[in-house]
Amino acid sequence: MLKLGVPSKGRLMDKTFDWFGARGLTMGKGGTEREYSGVVDGFDGLQLILLSAGEIPRELAAGRIHLGVTGSDLVREKLAHWDEQVEELALMGFGHADLVIAVPSFWVDVETLDDLDAAAAAFRRRHGFRLRIATKYHRLVRDYLTWNGVADYQLVDSQGATEGTVRHETAEAIADITSTGETLRANHLKMLSDGPVHASQATLFRARNADWEGGARERLAVLLQRLGLD
Amino acid sequence: MRDKSAERAEAAGFLQAFLDAGAVPVETDILQPAGTLLDLYGEDIRARAFTTQGPDGEAMLRPDFTVPVVQMHMAEGGDPARYAYVGEVFRRQAADPGRPAEYLQVGYELFGGDAPEADAETFALFHRLLSPLSTRVTTGDIGILLAAVSGLATSQARKTALLRHIWRPRRFRTLIDRYAGRTEAPAHRRDVTARADPFAHVGPEIGLRDRADVEARIAALKADAAEPPISKSEVELIDDILRLRAPSDAALQTLRDVAMDMPSIAPAVDGLARRLEALDARGIAPESLPFEGSHGRSTMEYYDGFVFSFSAAGRADLPPLSTGGRYDALTRVLGQGRATPAVGGVIRPALTLEAR
Image 1: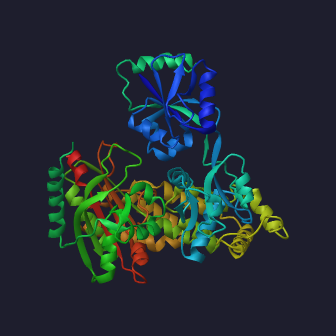
Image 2: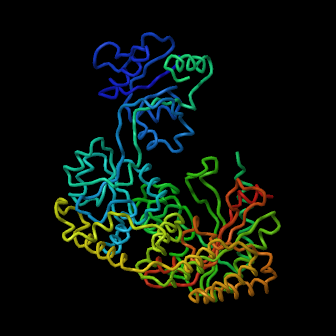
Image 3: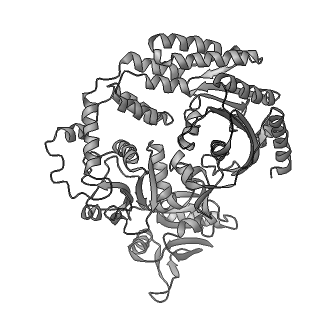
């Protein structure tokens, strides 16, 4: 039996069901609206496991599910060496969101990472501590800033309402997910022009560490053919 | 499964050799306060070290011995002083998850004394211990590069920015290219410095980085725009230093030539000459010692003078068996106003075992 983890609620779940539905696999929640088990019609040997999107990367890494649908940002953030643990089978074309670095709009001197780096150096000299960037995407943001040679910053954890941290003076800049930039503008923030840290979308992943013996590998080959991914 | 008792026995041999060379054995805590390490290395250290909660807040499992040993010496040590230590260090192996995250390090640090003599004494000790193995040695001198940048005919602000990124080669190159006029300043920078009121219609002032910070940076951008480019010949001299790969005697000749056009590096080149003499006196011929102008730039952030590493010959898959160098500036950062010359190095016994 092939185990497929899909998001257990909201638009991400509906869109996932639509995506598989468009390819001839009818999926839905089993029983009542509140029950977290799923059913698949039109494909034998595939078990649907409804999970929080944030837990799917961990379940994939542990090999407890063979396949999983979740945001590419969550996999990159939560799994070290993500590409050694999972394989991207399909970019699904929905759930688009960009992880961006944003700074106050009135920082007219800062448009790029280059500016942010220079501003961070001057900020540390004047204020005596490293410029704070509030985020919950620590790994993605740190790797990105390291690669781009930005120094003299620190990441401070923010699990929600991140756009408010600058006004409340618990951070000088933020790194967060945005789809339209509306919340950023409402909080007098602007994104850097270098492009996003990561452009995320819902992605179908294969767990490299799952048990692929006992017919699972063959079931996957059939599934990929049905999905047009072979 | 790697054999920890063999690793420990290998480490004990190196430690004894350091003690025989006159070092005092020292111990440090495994749990180190995270704040000091973060302020030194920046957020990047989180990708390399294990963070946890200690009794006094955030702590890291000792990623190296140098920082606690320097702190201990600056608090209570005399001059000169030689220390040796052995113990576990902990590293997240971000680049290579196959490498162990916990391994022994044996180290030797020498504080005080005459720099070229101390460099030669330390290097000769490591050389003697590691030359029975089949190793490839590389040396360099970050101090020459620092002196070259400090002596550029350009503004202090530009020199400070370049010095800050000596250890980040990509960012360093971007800055050099811009300061040399090889690439244009981004358009938004020209715009913001040209506007009569740059703060018109840009939203309210929020956060701790205030209007004064922004105005100071605009003033800095204006000053930088008025600065003439760094000359082509100076950039070429920097590149000559960075590209240099030669036996130490030939490298010294090249650097003496560079110093004719760039007198700021002359004292650092004299230091190299004196170090080579001191090494020669200890039986290590300069022509046998490879020198690389950019050695130690991307991996060993706190070294600011002599640097060296020993790698297993024919084993490009292994990290260096041993690295070391001079870190005078680190003692100033950690010494609360005091500083002392310092040089040292570490050996990874698990790797010398693999190389045997």
